[in-house]
Length: 147
Image 1 (cartoon, one colour):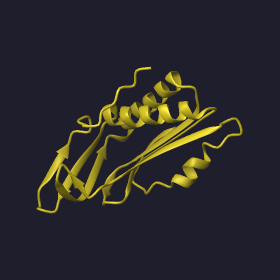
Image 2: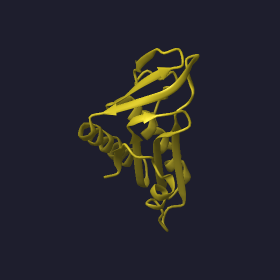
Image 3: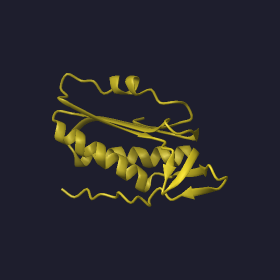
Image 4: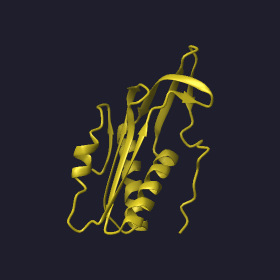
């Protein structure tokens, strides 16, 4: 499977090695880290929850769409679940392609579409003792993927 949901820390170096190819001239990756703030509030930790089989199925669909839309050779994505603290890696995406433009565009498409469609829920915990479930589709940085 190219899309994984994991309770374990992500190892970007080993994932990247799975994308190496003598025919690939470009590689692009994205690392999403837990930050210590959100909308002006201090965050102490996040908890990601998922229904793993459904998340994997939808994640695989996102990657299949990327293969259909962009001229890429390979792509891998891993999203963490469980409790994560600021600075920890929450999601990793890597894409290889013959040319860099396809790798960049597909990587951007994959992260944005995962956030919009894959059923992984984020629960934020704040320093003031409050907590909130964050809508993963409510991203103030939404982008269009029209070609």
